[in-house]
Image (cartoon, rainbow, N blue to C red; front, top):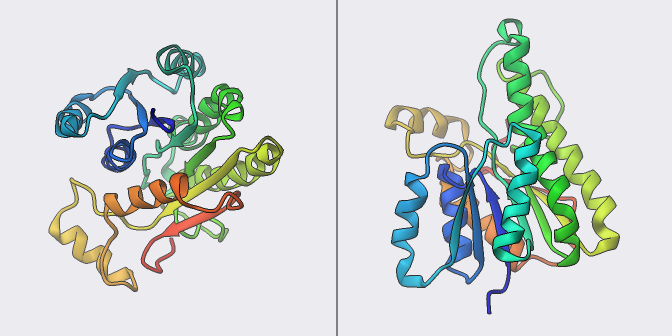
Length: 243
């Protein structure tokens, strides 16, 4: 019998795919959400066939409030449960705050904060039934409020994620639900060039950027092995680097 069903939003991203793999190979059923490009998930599913994992794909544009509701309803229809929600969606926006338009600001906040709230809102009743877990994504150093002139919208939204995580942790603790946030630093992804990796490495005390699989390992540990008393935490994985 499957131990848990996990809904992963943005599962087709580099980090999302590694999270799916890390959880699926441990026996969890996976509801893998994507917006446009399903091919990376299809390749991953083929790779995992030998492990007899159970993965279903769900395509929704979660910028629409109603789409978040539909996603949760259809995951429940397919799996009859949601034990864990992993909100990975969080694109990075790099632009001077004086050049950011209202449309760009709204898009950054929508993608990095509102989507996490919306999906959690519709899923929380089901997660409470299972005394489950919500995992959000922020960034290492998010709790240090400072001037981020070149990434203000992103950082403002992720600071909101930190507050949302701690608030939900306090509100849902009486129901046996844990809420934590994973806070990556500079992470090497598939599109990262050698020059970019070297530039990142200069900033990091550990001497190299992190890898998506290392982030996924933290998510796996938090879900399957961490103490039940761990909730409301902002967990950095950044090689001692802070943004």
